[in-house]
Length: 260
Ligand code: COA
Picture 1: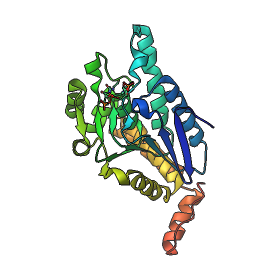
Picture 2: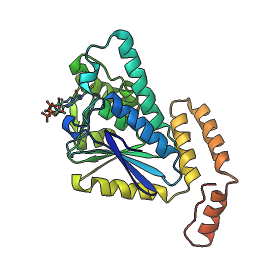
Picture 3: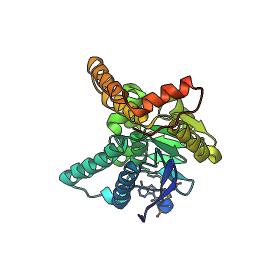
Picture 4: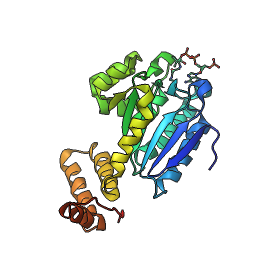
């Protein structure tokens, strides 16, 4: 499919979605969010694609936020709908069933930071700048940032970022656990692809069930979460991949996964 504000490149088993509005630092307007929704939806059903990388074009930004021109003048009702719509699209990325790695070069602010938070993992270039500066604009994070950020970095550190609107560098983001690795900017995409291939070398159903177990379980009380884990563990048992994993180990050879 052809998109206006992003492009999709497939180098199976990895696909890369690049938000491409560099003149406005890849700000996420309505059309871009719709296109992200379509592109992720398409890749979710593409069995050849095991891991998805998400990046921003132009080298200056992953995404510098929701498009500020689009939310000035929203009424209370329109603002509510605006937030719900963005939340739903990011939630579907988070629950896609395949790992999504945010490749953050330059600014990931506001909605851009929230988009990264909805991804499975976050790699930052050493020039990355992250933050939730919404309060400086008289608004609040509305694409899940007020919930995912404190869940990821802890209540205190999350509230500090949300209340000050501070923009932090890659090393500080790493120290807080907001990003998982920091790499030189020139190596960002190569490192992301290597990480994607490392994940894609593992059993497809096991990757999917692990994502489900973590995503479902983290917001549940531990006893309920453990029940979910046991259910997910049961789902991978009896599969062809389970038999193959053991056979390959005992046969001292690389496994050949079927995803069945
Ligand atoms: N929405 C719409 N346009 C945006 C944008 C956003 N979130 N972020 C940047 N842009 C546009 C700018 O308006 C500018 O457009 P112009 O050339 O037509 O004037 C262009 O992108 C380049 O940005 P500029 O501000 O000139 O670059 P800079 O290097 O001086 O500053 C930032 C970079 C990221 C610090 C600054 O653009 C900024 O603060 N952006 C808003 C960040 C934000 O508050 N995001 C949360 C929104 S909820």
